[in-house]
Image 1: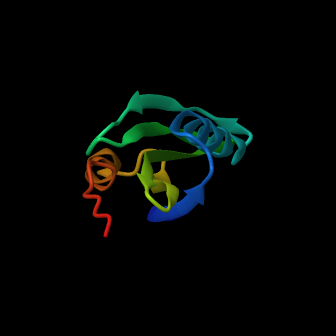
Image 2: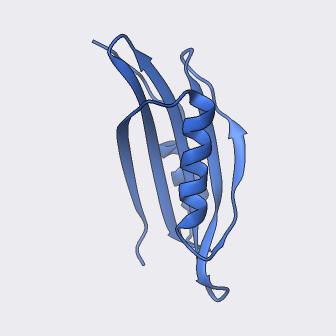
Length: 110
């Protein structure tokens, strides 16, 4: 598996805590073997978290991942923004690249 990154923006009826719990549950359910560590990641006045961990179908082949999620409220609804980065465990430079991609990002609401 190659490394990849993706950004997802999805409307959510949930408050930040419930949206983060659902996202974390979905992350853990992707593979039969998984780990998840959470750090607070609030910025720009919005609730957020940083997630990191690993997934595997078997112990010999695993993936590392890092996510940055933010609960963005607007006058027209709430959104969960997720920046996700993953690569095979041990990929050189993954931590540095993932830290840049999941670092703080600007939020502009027109």
